Image 1 (tube, rainbow, N blue to C red):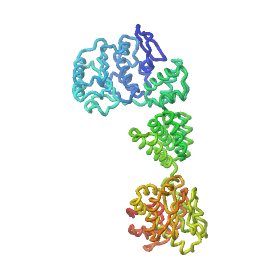
Image 2 (image 1 turned 90 degrees about the vertical axis):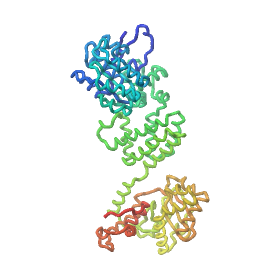
Image 3 (image 1 turned 30 degrees about the vertical axis):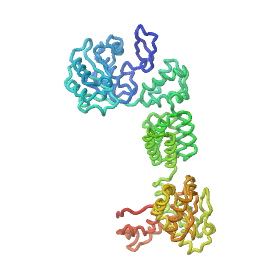
Image 4 (image 1 turned 60 degrees about the vertical axis):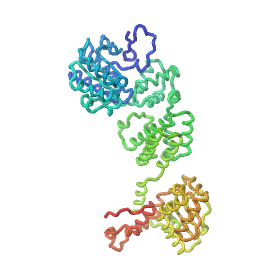
Length: 598
Protein backbone atom coordinates (compact mmCIF):
# COMPACT_ATOMS: atom_id res chain seq x y z
CA UNK A 1 0.00 0.00 0.00
CA UNK A 2 1.39 3.37 -1.02
CA UNK A 3 0.54 6.71 0.54
CA UNK A 4 1.56 10.33 0.20
CA UNK A 5 3.09 12.34 3.05
CA UNK A 6 4.10 15.94 2.42
CA UNK A 7 4.89 15.29 -1.27
CA UNK A 8 6.98 12.20 -0.60
CA UNK A 9 5.99 8.65 -1.45
CA UNK A 10 6.43 5.91 1.13
CA UNK A 11 5.54 2.25 1.06
CA UNK A 12 4.31 -0.18 3.70
CA UNK A 13 3.38 -3.80 3.35
CA UNK A 14 -0.10 -5.05 4.09
CA UNK A 15 1.02 -6.98 7.14
CA UNK A 16 2.91 -4.12 8.84
CA UNK A 17 0.49 -1.20 8.52
CA UNK A 18 0.91 -0.46 12.22
CA UNK A 19 4.71 -0.72 12.17
CA UNK A 20 6.55 2.54 12.93
CA UNK A 21 8.75 3.95 10.19
CA UNK A 22 11.51 6.40 11.15
CA UNK A 23 11.37 9.85 9.64
CA UNK A 24 14.58 9.38 7.65
CA UNK A 25 12.94 6.52 5.73
CA UNK A 26 9.44 7.94 5.58
CA UNK A 27 10.72 11.21 4.10
CA UNK A 28 13.34 9.70 1.83
CA UNK A 29 13.09 11.39 -1.63
CA UNK A 30 11.41 9.27 -4.29
CA UNK A 31 11.99 11.50 -7.32
CA UNK A 32 14.62 13.95 -8.50
CA UNK A 33 12.59 17.02 -7.55
CA UNK A 34 12.47 15.83 -3.91
CA UNK A 35 16.28 15.87 -3.54
CA UNK A 36 17.44 18.79 -1.36
CA UNK A 37 20.53 20.86 -2.07
CA UNK A 38 22.00 18.84 -4.97
CA UNK A 39 20.60 20.67 -7.99
CA UNK A 40 23.90 20.44 -9.92
CA UNK A 41 23.81 16.62 -9.78
CA UNK A 42 20.07 16.25 -10.38
CA UNK A 43 20.07 18.53 -13.42
CA UNK A 44 23.02 16.70 -15.00
CA UNK A 45 21.35 13.30 -14.57
CA UNK A 46 18.06 14.60 -15.95
CA UNK A 47 19.83 15.97 -19.03
CA UNK A 48 21.72 12.69 -19.51
CA UNK A 49 18.44 10.73 -19.46
CA UNK A 50 16.64 13.08 -21.82
CA UNK A 51 19.55 13.19 -24.29
CA UNK A 52 20.14 9.41 -23.96
CA UNK A 53 23.80 9.96 -23.07
CA UNK A 54 24.00 7.40 -20.29
CA UNK A 55 27.37 6.30 -18.98
CA UNK A 56 27.91 2.78 -17.68
CA UNK A 57 29.39 3.80 -14.30
CA UNK A 58 28.61 6.70 -11.95
CA UNK A 59 30.37 7.65 -8.70
CA UNK A 60 28.55 9.77 -6.09
CA UNK A 61 30.89 11.38 -3.56
CA UNK A 62 30.05 13.28 -0.39
CA UNK A 63 29.67 13.23 3.38
CA UNK A 64 27.04 11.18 5.19
CA UNK A 65 23.35 11.85 4.89
CA UNK A 66 23.34 14.22 1.90
CA UNK A 67 21.64 11.96 -0.65
CA UNK A 68 24.23 9.77 -2.41
CA UNK A 69 22.33 6.46 -2.19
CA UNK A 70 18.95 8.18 -2.56
CA UNK A 71 20.02 9.72 -5.86
CA UNK A 72 21.35 6.35 -7.04
CA UNK A 73 17.99 4.71 -6.26
CA UNK A 74 16.02 7.47 -7.99
CA UNK A 75 18.34 7.17 -11.00
CA UNK A 76 17.70 3.41 -11.09
CA UNK A 77 13.92 4.00 -11.00
CA UNK A 78 14.25 6.60 -13.77
CA UNK A 79 16.07 4.10 -16.00
CA UNK A 80 13.87 1.06 -15.33
CA UNK A 81 10.49 2.77 -14.96
CA UNK A 82 7.78 1.35 -17.21
CA UNK A 83 7.58 4.75 -18.92
CA UNK A 84 11.36 5.13 -19.01
CA UNK A 85 14.03 5.88 -19.29
CA UNK A 86 12.48 9.10 -18.00
CA UNK A 87 13.57 11.96 -15.76
CA UNK A 88 10.22 11.74 -13.94
CA UNK A 89 9.58 8.12 -12.91
CA UNK A 90 5.94 7.42 -12.20
CA UNK A 91 6.45 5.76 -8.82
CA UNK A 92 3.37 3.59 -9.33
CA UNK A 93 4.46 0.89 -11.78
CA UNK A 94 5.71 -2.47 -10.50
CA UNK A 95 9.32 -1.63 -11.29
CA UNK A 96 9.29 1.68 -9.37
CA UNK A 97 7.60 0.13 -6.33
CA UNK A 98 9.94 -2.87 -6.26
CA UNK A 99 13.05 -0.66 -6.54
CA UNK A 100 11.79 1.52 -3.67
CA UNK A 101 11.21 -1.59 -1.55
CA UNK A 102 14.55 -3.16 -2.58
CA UNK A 103 12.99 -6.28 -4.11
CA UNK A 104 13.58 -5.65 -7.82
CA UNK A 105 15.59 -8.43 -9.46
CA UNK A 106 17.23 -6.07 -11.95
CA UNK A 107 18.54 -3.64 -9.30
CA UNK A 108 21.07 -5.12 -6.91
CA UNK A 109 22.08 -2.94 -3.94
CA UNK A 110 25.00 -4.21 -1.88
CA UNK A 111 27.13 -2.86 0.95
CA UNK A 112 30.80 -2.52 0.06
CA UNK A 113 31.84 -2.83 3.70
CA UNK A 114 30.39 -6.34 4.14
CA UNK A 115 30.88 -7.57 0.57
CA UNK A 116 34.42 -6.41 -0.02
CA UNK A 117 36.13 -9.69 -0.94
CA UNK A 118 37.26 -10.79 -4.37
CA UNK A 119 34.88 -13.78 -4.31
CA UNK A 120 31.80 -11.55 -3.91
CA UNK A 121 32.97 -9.35 -6.79
CA UNK A 122 33.52 -12.38 -8.99
CA UNK A 123 29.96 -13.51 -8.26
CA UNK A 124 28.74 -10.03 -9.07
CA UNK A 125 30.65 -10.03 -12.33
CA UNK A 126 28.99 -13.29 -13.34
CA UNK A 127 25.53 -12.00 -12.42
CA UNK A 128 25.99 -8.84 -14.49
CA UNK A 129 26.51 -10.90 -17.64
CA UNK A 130 22.89 -12.07 -17.69
CA UNK A 131 20.19 -9.93 -19.28
CA UNK A 132 17.72 -8.06 -17.05
CA UNK A 133 14.46 -9.77 -16.12
CA UNK A 134 11.95 -6.95 -16.67
CA UNK A 135 13.53 -3.54 -17.28
CA UNK A 136 16.00 -2.44 -19.93
CA UNK A 137 18.99 -2.31 -17.54
CA UNK A 138 20.62 -4.46 -14.87
CA UNK A 139 21.80 -1.96 -12.26
CA UNK A 140 24.29 -2.54 -9.44
CA UNK A 141 24.45 -0.05 -6.57
CA UNK A 142 27.50 -0.40 -4.29
CA UNK A 143 27.42 1.76 -1.15
CA UNK A 144 30.72 2.66 0.56
CA UNK A 145 32.59 1.30 -2.44
CA UNK A 146 35.93 2.45 -1.02
CA UNK A 147 35.73 -0.48 1.42
CA UNK A 148 36.39 -3.01 -1.36
CA UNK A 149 39.77 -4.71 -1.16
CA UNK A 150 42.47 -4.13 -3.76
CA UNK A 151 41.86 -7.61 -5.20
CA UNK A 152 38.14 -6.90 -5.43
CA UNK A 153 38.76 -3.65 -7.30
CA UNK A 154 41.09 -5.45 -9.68
CA UNK A 155 38.46 -8.11 -10.32
CA UNK A 156 35.95 -5.38 -11.13
CA UNK A 157 38.17 -3.43 -13.51
CA UNK A 158 37.60 -5.44 -16.70
CA UNK A 159 33.84 -5.39 -16.27
CA UNK A 160 33.92 -1.63 -15.65
CA UNK A 161 36.01 -1.06 -18.76
CA UNK A 162 33.93 -3.22 -21.13
CA UNK A 163 30.54 -3.89 -19.47
CA UNK A 164 27.56 -5.47 -21.23
CA UNK A 165 25.26 -2.95 -22.88
CA UNK A 166 22.56 -3.56 -20.29
CA UNK A 167 24.84 -3.11 -17.22
CA UNK A 168 25.00 0.07 -15.16
CA UNK A 169 27.08 0.63 -12.01
CA UNK A 170 26.24 3.27 -9.38
CA UNK A 171 28.88 3.74 -6.65
CA UNK A 172 28.58 5.82 -3.48
CA UNK A 173 31.45 6.75 -1.17
CA UNK A 174 32.50 9.16 1.55
CA UNK A 175 36.23 8.64 0.92
CA UNK A 176 37.04 8.82 -2.80
CA UNK A 177 40.77 9.05 -2.13
CA UNK A 178 40.73 5.35 -1.18
CA UNK A 179 39.42 4.28 -4.58
CA UNK A 180 42.12 3.29 -7.11
CA UNK A 181 42.69 5.77 -9.92
CA UNK A 182 42.04 3.01 -12.46
CA UNK A 183 38.48 2.71 -11.14
CA UNK A 184 37.93 6.48 -10.84
CA UNK A 185 38.93 6.97 -14.48
CA UNK A 186 36.14 4.62 -15.60
CA UNK A 187 33.37 6.48 -13.75
CA UNK A 188 31.53 9.74 -14.13
CA UNK A 189 32.11 11.44 -10.79
CA UNK A 190 29.55 13.65 -9.02
CA UNK A 191 30.57 15.52 -5.86
CA UNK A 192 27.57 16.20 -3.66
CA UNK A 193 27.58 19.28 -1.43
CA UNK A 194 26.71 19.67 2.21
CA UNK A 195 23.12 20.86 2.37
CA UNK A 196 22.84 24.55 3.37
CA UNK A 197 21.41 25.23 6.81
CA UNK A 198 18.39 27.26 5.55
CA UNK A 199 17.32 24.37 3.31
CA UNK A 200 17.58 21.90 6.19
CA UNK A 201 15.55 24.26 8.38
CA UNK A 202 12.88 24.56 5.68
CA UNK A 203 12.64 20.78 5.23
CA UNK A 204 12.42 20.22 9.00
CA UNK A 205 9.68 22.82 9.21
CA UNK A 206 7.75 20.97 6.49
CA UNK A 207 8.21 17.65 8.29
CA UNK A 208 7.13 19.11 11.62
CA UNK A 209 3.97 20.51 10.08
CA UNK A 210 3.13 17.19 8.43
CA UNK A 211 3.85 15.25 11.63
CA UNK A 212 1.79 17.76 13.68
CA UNK A 213 4.80 18.72 15.83
CA UNK A 214 5.33 22.29 17.05
CA UNK A 215 9.01 23.33 16.73
CA UNK A 216 10.24 26.87 17.38
CA UNK A 217 12.67 28.53 14.96
CA UNK A 218 15.67 28.44 17.30
CA UNK A 219 15.14 24.70 17.76
CA UNK A 220 15.08 24.18 13.99
CA UNK A 221 18.29 26.15 13.61
CA UNK A 222 19.95 24.19 16.44
CA UNK A 223 19.04 20.86 14.81
CA UNK A 224 20.34 22.08 11.45
CA UNK A 225 23.59 23.24 13.06
CA UNK A 226 24.08 19.87 14.69
CA UNK A 227 23.45 18.04 11.40
CA UNK A 228 26.50 19.70 9.79
CA UNK A 229 24.96 19.69 6.32
CA UNK A 230 23.44 16.19 6.49
CA UNK A 231 19.67 16.08 6.12
CA UNK A 232 19.45 12.47 7.32
CA UNK A 233 21.20 13.40 10.58
CA UNK A 234 18.73 16.25 11.04
CA UNK A 235 15.77 13.90 10.43
CA UNK A 236 17.14 11.36 12.92
CA UNK A 237 17.64 14.13 15.50
CA UNK A 238 14.08 15.33 15.03
CA UNK A 239 12.83 11.76 15.43
CA UNK A 240 14.71 11.46 18.72
CA UNK A 241 13.40 14.80 19.97
CA UNK A 242 9.81 13.83 19.23
CA UNK A 243 10.32 10.71 21.33
CA UNK A 244 11.84 12.85 24.09
CA UNK A 245 9.46 15.81 24.21
CA UNK A 246 6.38 14.83 22.24
CA UNK A 247 4.66 17.37 20.01
CA UNK A 248 6.25 20.58 21.36
CA UNK A 249 10.00 21.07 20.92
CA UNK A 250 12.05 24.09 21.99
CA UNK A 251 15.69 25.08 21.55
CA UNK A 252 16.45 24.09 25.15
CA UNK A 253 15.30 20.54 24.37
CA UNK A 254 17.67 20.32 21.41
CA UNK A 255 20.60 21.70 23.38
CA UNK A 256 20.05 19.37 26.33
CA UNK A 257 19.70 16.24 24.20
CA UNK A 258 22.62 16.78 21.84
CA UNK A 259 25.04 18.78 23.99
CA UNK A 260 24.98 21.78 21.67
CA UNK A 261 25.65 25.33 22.79
CA UNK A 262 22.95 27.97 22.42
CA UNK A 263 23.60 30.59 19.77
CA UNK A 264 23.36 33.29 22.45
CA UNK A 265 26.09 31.58 24.51
CA UNK A 266 28.29 31.25 21.44
CA UNK A 267 27.92 34.93 20.66
CA UNK A 268 28.58 35.83 24.32
CA UNK A 269 31.85 33.85 24.18
CA UNK A 270 32.85 35.69 21.01
CA UNK A 271 32.03 39.02 22.66
CA UNK A 272 34.19 38.11 25.66
CA UNK A 273 37.08 37.14 23.39
CA UNK A 274 36.89 40.35 21.36
CA UNK A 275 36.66 42.42 24.53
CA UNK A 276 39.53 40.65 26.30
CA UNK A 277 37.15 39.70 29.15
CA UNK A 278 39.10 36.76 30.58
CA UNK A 279 37.04 36.42 33.80
CA UNK A 280 33.90 36.33 31.66
CA UNK A 281 35.42 33.65 29.44
CA UNK A 282 36.33 31.45 32.40
CA UNK A 283 32.83 31.85 33.84
CA UNK A 284 31.10 30.98 30.57
CA UNK A 285 33.28 27.93 29.92
CA UNK A 286 32.64 26.72 33.46
CA UNK A 287 28.88 27.03 33.01
CA UNK A 288 28.95 25.18 29.68
CA UNK A 289 31.17 22.41 31.02
CA UNK A 290 29.03 21.97 34.14
CA UNK A 291 25.92 21.63 31.97
CA UNK A 292 27.54 18.81 29.97
CA UNK A 293 28.18 20.59 26.68
CA UNK A 294 30.55 19.04 24.14
CA UNK A 295 33.63 21.27 24.43
CA UNK A 296 35.25 19.85 21.31
CA UNK A 297 32.15 20.70 19.32
CA UNK A 298 32.19 24.15 20.94
CA UNK A 299 35.67 24.82 19.51
CA UNK A 300 34.45 23.89 16.03
CA UNK A 301 31.43 26.19 16.34
CA UNK A 302 33.63 29.05 17.59
CA UNK A 303 35.88 28.53 14.57
CA UNK A 304 32.82 28.73 12.34
CA UNK A 305 31.66 31.89 14.11
CA UNK A 306 34.98 33.68 13.62
CA UNK A 307 35.12 32.43 10.03
CA UNK A 308 31.78 34.14 9.51
CA UNK A 309 33.19 37.24 11.19
CA UNK A 310 36.09 37.24 8.72
CA UNK A 311 33.63 37.02 5.83
CA UNK A 312 31.58 39.93 7.16
CA UNK A 313 34.77 41.97 7.67
CA UNK A 314 36.00 41.42 4.14
CA UNK A 315 32.94 40.75 1.94
CA UNK A 316 30.11 43.21 1.39
CA UNK A 317 28.07 40.96 -0.91
CA UNK A 318 25.18 39.40 1.11
CA UNK A 319 25.01 36.44 -1.28
CA UNK A 320 28.51 35.39 -0.19
CA UNK A 321 27.69 35.40 3.52
CA UNK A 322 26.55 31.78 3.28
CA UNK A 323 23.91 30.23 5.54
CA UNK A 324 23.71 33.10 8.01
CA UNK A 325 20.33 34.25 9.25
CA UNK A 326 19.45 37.94 9.62
CA UNK A 327 19.87 37.72 13.40
CA UNK A 328 23.35 36.19 13.04
CA UNK A 329 24.38 38.84 10.51
CA UNK A 330 23.28 41.59 12.87
CA UNK A 331 25.48 40.21 15.67
CA UNK A 332 28.45 39.67 13.34
CA UNK A 333 28.25 43.23 11.98
CA UNK A 334 28.24 44.55 15.53
CA UNK A 335 31.27 42.44 16.44
CA UNK A 336 33.04 43.46 13.22
CA UNK A 337 33.13 47.01 14.56
CA UNK A 338 35.25 45.77 17.49
CA UNK A 339 37.77 43.75 15.49
CA UNK A 340 39.73 43.62 12.25
CA UNK A 341 40.96 40.97 9.83
CA UNK A 342 44.40 40.43 11.39
CA UNK A 343 42.98 39.87 14.88
CA UNK A 344 40.26 37.52 13.61
CA UNK A 345 42.86 35.54 11.68
CA UNK A 346 45.00 35.14 14.79
CA UNK A 347 41.96 33.95 16.75
CA UNK A 348 41.07 31.37 14.10
CA UNK A 349 44.68 30.16 14.12
CA UNK A 350 44.62 29.61 17.89
CA UNK A 351 41.26 27.80 17.70
CA UNK A 352 42.48 25.59 14.87
CA UNK A 353 45.48 24.54 16.93
CA UNK A 354 43.23 23.87 19.94
CA UNK A 355 40.83 21.77 17.84
CA UNK A 356 43.73 19.60 16.63
CA UNK A 357 44.89 19.02 20.21
CA UNK A 358 41.44 18.66 21.77
CA UNK A 359 40.93 15.02 20.81
CA UNK A 360 44.13 14.03 22.66
CA UNK A 361 43.72 16.27 25.72
CA UNK A 362 43.14 14.75 29.14
CA UNK A 363 41.41 17.94 30.31
CA UNK A 364 39.49 19.53 27.47
CA UNK A 365 38.24 22.32 29.69
CA UNK A 366 41.78 23.40 30.62
CA UNK A 367 42.89 23.31 27.00
CA UNK A 368 39.86 25.33 25.90
CA UNK A 369 40.32 27.92 28.66
CA UNK A 370 43.98 28.48 27.81
CA UNK A 371 43.15 28.68 24.08
CA UNK A 372 40.45 31.29 24.66
CA UNK A 373 42.77 33.33 26.89
CA UNK A 374 45.25 33.34 24.02
CA UNK A 375 42.42 34.38 21.71
CA UNK A 376 41.50 37.24 24.05
CA UNK A 377 45.10 38.44 24.00
CA UNK A 378 45.22 38.14 20.21
CA UNK A 379 42.03 40.20 20.00
CA UNK A 380 43.28 43.04 22.18
CA UNK A 381 47.06 43.24 21.61
CA UNK A 382 48.05 46.01 19.24
CA UNK A 383 49.24 44.62 15.90
CA UNK A 384 52.56 45.45 14.28
CA UNK A 385 50.76 47.10 11.37
CA UNK A 386 48.98 49.51 13.72
CA UNK A 387 52.22 50.42 15.46
CA UNK A 388 53.97 51.09 12.15
CA UNK A 389 51.08 53.26 10.97
CA UNK A 390 51.20 55.24 14.21
CA UNK A 391 54.97 55.66 13.93
CA UNK A 392 54.63 57.00 10.39
CA UNK A 393 51.94 59.41 11.49
CA UNK A 394 54.04 60.62 14.41
CA UNK A 395 57.13 61.05 12.28
CA UNK A 396 55.10 63.08 9.80
CA UNK A 397 53.26 65.44 12.12
CA UNK A 398 54.09 65.35 15.85
CA UNK A 399 56.22 67.94 17.55
CA UNK A 400 59.19 67.44 19.88
CA UNK A 401 58.90 65.31 22.99
CA UNK A 402 61.29 65.33 25.96
CA UNK A 403 64.10 62.83 26.18
CA UNK A 404 63.94 61.98 29.86
CA UNK A 405 65.50 59.09 31.70
CA UNK A 406 62.29 57.11 31.98
CA UNK A 407 61.09 57.53 28.39
CA UNK A 408 60.72 53.90 27.33
CA UNK A 409 58.12 51.50 26.02
CA UNK A 410 54.90 51.97 27.92
CA UNK A 411 55.78 55.33 29.56
CA UNK A 412 53.87 58.35 28.24
CA UNK A 413 55.90 61.33 27.17
CA UNK A 414 55.93 64.45 29.35
CA UNK A 415 55.50 68.03 28.30
CA UNK A 416 58.11 70.10 26.51
CA UNK A 417 60.60 71.77 28.80
CA UNK A 418 60.07 69.37 31.70
CA UNK A 419 62.89 67.48 33.31
CA UNK A 420 61.55 64.23 31.86
CA UNK A 421 58.91 61.81 33.06
CA UNK A 422 59.46 59.93 36.29
CA UNK A 423 57.78 56.90 37.78
CA UNK A 424 55.11 59.27 39.06
CA UNK A 425 54.02 59.87 35.45
CA UNK A 426 53.62 56.16 34.74
CA UNK A 427 50.12 54.74 34.34
CA UNK A 428 50.48 51.93 36.90
CA UNK A 429 47.59 49.79 37.97
CA UNK A 430 49.53 48.37 40.90
CA UNK A 431 52.83 49.80 42.12
CA UNK A 432 55.47 48.54 44.48
CA UNK A 433 57.97 50.78 46.20
CA UNK A 434 59.77 52.89 43.58
CA UNK A 435 63.25 54.44 43.81
CA UNK A 436 63.03 57.65 45.75
CA UNK A 437 65.39 59.57 43.48
CA UNK A 438 63.43 58.67 40.42
CA UNK A 439 60.09 59.48 41.99
CA UNK A 440 61.25 62.82 43.26
CA UNK A 441 63.25 63.63 40.14
CA UNK A 442 66.03 64.82 42.44
CA UNK A 443 68.99 63.59 40.41
CA UNK A 444 71.00 66.23 38.51
CA UNK A 445 70.56 66.49 34.75
CA UNK A 446 73.98 64.96 34.04
CA UNK A 447 73.21 61.99 36.27
CA UNK A 448 69.81 61.56 34.64
CA UNK A 449 71.44 61.49 31.23
CA UNK A 450 73.85 58.78 32.43
CA UNK A 451 70.96 56.75 33.79
CA UNK A 452 69.08 57.23 30.50
CA UNK A 453 72.08 55.89 28.61
CA UNK A 454 72.22 52.86 30.92
CA UNK A 455 68.50 52.29 30.36
CA UNK A 456 69.00 52.31 26.60
CA UNK A 457 71.87 49.83 26.90
CA UNK A 458 69.79 47.66 29.20
CA UNK A 459 66.85 47.62 26.76
CA UNK A 460 69.19 46.79 23.88
CA UNK A 461 70.67 43.79 25.71
CA UNK A 462 67.47 42.77 27.48
CA UNK A 463 67.01 39.59 25.46
CA UNK A 464 70.52 38.36 26.27
CA UNK A 465 70.03 39.25 29.93
CA UNK A 466 66.87 37.14 30.09
CA UNK A 467 68.86 34.21 28.75
CA UNK A 468 71.42 34.65 31.54
CA UNK A 469 68.68 34.78 34.16
CA UNK A 470 67.18 31.58 32.74
CA UNK A 471 70.45 29.72 33.36
CA UNK A 472 70.02 30.35 37.08
CA UNK A 473 66.20 30.13 37.24
CA UNK A 474 64.58 28.26 34.37
CA UNK A 475 61.05 29.56 34.96
CA UNK A 476 62.18 33.17 35.04
CA UNK A 477 62.62 33.35 31.25
CA UNK A 478 58.96 32.64 30.58
CA UNK A 479 57.85 35.02 33.33
CA UNK A 480 60.00 37.82 31.85
CA UNK A 481 58.62 37.33 28.33
CA UNK A 482 56.43 40.46 28.55
CA UNK A 483 58.53 42.43 31.04
CA UNK A 484 60.70 45.37 30.06
CA UNK A 485 63.05 47.77 31.90
CA UNK A 486 61.66 51.28 32.26
CA UNK A 487 63.95 53.09 34.71
CA UNK A 488 67.44 52.94 36.25
CA UNK A 489 69.11 54.81 39.10
CA UNK A 490 72.13 54.30 41.32
CA UNK A 491 70.83 51.27 43.18
CA UNK A 492 67.57 50.26 41.50
CA UNK A 493 66.18 48.94 38.25
CA UNK A 494 62.45 49.16 37.59
CA UNK A 495 60.77 46.53 35.40
CA UNK A 496 57.30 47.00 33.97
CA UNK A 497 54.83 44.15 33.44
CA UNK A 498 51.68 44.36 31.35
CA UNK A 499 48.73 45.35 33.51
CA UNK A 500 46.78 42.55 31.87
CA UNK A 501 48.95 39.91 33.53
CA UNK A 502 49.60 40.87 37.16
CA UNK A 503 50.22 37.25 38.08
CA UNK A 504 53.54 37.32 36.17
CA UNK A 505 54.86 40.03 38.49
CA UNK A 506 53.75 38.14 41.60
CA UNK A 507 55.80 35.14 40.59
CA UNK A 508 58.97 37.10 41.34
CA UNK A 509 58.08 37.08 45.02
CA UNK A 510 60.07 33.84 45.25
CA UNK A 511 63.63 34.49 46.31
CA UNK A 512 65.44 32.40 43.69
CA UNK A 513 63.94 34.16 40.67
CA UNK A 514 64.45 37.64 42.11
CA UNK A 515 68.04 36.91 43.15
CA UNK A 516 68.91 35.53 39.72
CA UNK A 517 67.48 38.64 38.06
CA UNK A 518 69.26 41.06 40.41
CA UNK A 519 72.53 39.18 39.93
CA UNK A 520 72.31 39.44 36.12
CA UNK A 521 71.37 43.13 36.24
CA UNK A 522 74.15 43.90 38.69
CA UNK A 523 76.72 42.18 36.49
CA UNK A 524 75.53 44.19 33.50
CA UNK A 525 75.49 47.57 35.30
CA UNK A 526 78.69 46.76 37.24
CA UNK A 527 77.12 47.62 40.58
CA UNK A 528 74.76 46.01 43.03
CA UNK A 529 71.12 46.83 42.32
CA UNK A 530 67.70 45.94 43.59
CA UNK A 531 64.67 45.31 41.38
CA UNK A 532 61.26 46.95 41.70
CA UNK A 533 58.19 46.09 39.65
CA UNK A 534 55.26 48.08 38.31
CA UNK A 535 52.19 47.17 36.26
CA UNK A 536 51.84 49.42 33.24
CA UNK A 537 49.16 49.46 30.57
CA UNK A 538 50.82 49.48 27.17
CA UNK A 539 50.22 52.56 25.06
CA UNK A 540 51.66 52.04 21.56
CA UNK A 541 50.96 55.67 20.65
CA UNK A 542 52.97 56.87 23.61
CA UNK A 543 55.75 54.40 22.85
CA UNK A 544 56.03 55.73 19.35
CA UNK A 545 55.80 59.34 20.55
CA UNK A 546 58.75 58.76 22.85
CA UNK A 547 61.02 57.82 19.98
CA UNK A 548 59.48 59.48 16.93
CA UNK A 549 60.95 63.00 17.31
CA UNK A 550 64.51 61.72 17.58
CA UNK A 551 63.89 59.28 14.74
CA UNK A 552 62.44 61.99 12.51
CA UNK A 553 65.26 64.34 13.40
CA UNK A 554 67.85 61.70 12.60
CA UNK A 555 66.13 60.84 9.32
CA UNK A 556 66.20 64.49 8.24
CA UNK A 557 69.75 65.25 9.39
CA UNK A 558 72.66 64.59 6.99
CA UNK A 559 74.98 61.78 7.99
CA UNK A 560 78.73 61.45 7.60
CA UNK A 561 78.44 59.89 4.18
CA UNK A 562 76.12 62.52 2.67
CA UNK A 563 72.71 64.01 3.28
CA UNK A 564 69.35 62.29 3.76
CA UNK A 565 68.75 58.79 2.49
CA UNK A 566 71.53 59.04 -0.05
CA UNK A 567 74.12 59.38 2.67
CA UNK A 568 73.01 56.15 4.38
CA UNK A 569 73.79 53.79 1.53
CA UNK A 570 76.66 51.40 1.85
CA UNK A 571 76.58 51.16 5.65
CA UNK A 572 77.34 47.92 7.45
CA UNK A 573 74.88 46.44 9.98
CA UNK A 574 77.09 47.74 12.78
CA UNK A 575 76.98 51.26 11.36
CA UNK A 576 73.23 51.08 10.88
CA UNK A 577 72.83 50.00 14.51
CA UNK A 578 74.42 53.31 15.56
CA UNK A 579 71.96 55.33 13.48
CA UNK A 580 69.59 57.08 15.95
CA UNK A 581 66.42 56.21 14.01
CA UNK A 582 67.40 52.57 13.56
CA UNK A 583 68.57 52.37 17.16
CA UNK A 584 65.19 53.59 18.40
CA UNK A 585 63.37 51.05 16.24
CA UNK A 586 65.56 48.23 17.55
CA UNK A 587 64.86 49.30 21.13
CA UNK A 588 61.13 49.58 20.54
CA UNK A 589 60.77 46.12 19.01
CA UNK A 590 63.64 44.42 20.87
CA UNK A 591 65.14 43.48 17.51
CA UNK A 592 68.47 42.90 15.81
CA UNK A 593 69.72 43.63 12.29
CA UNK A 594 70.02 40.43 10.27
CA UNK A 595 70.67 41.87 6.81
CA UNK A 596 71.00 45.22 5.04
CA UNK A 597 69.50 45.66 1.59
CA UNK A 598 69.93 48.93 -0.26
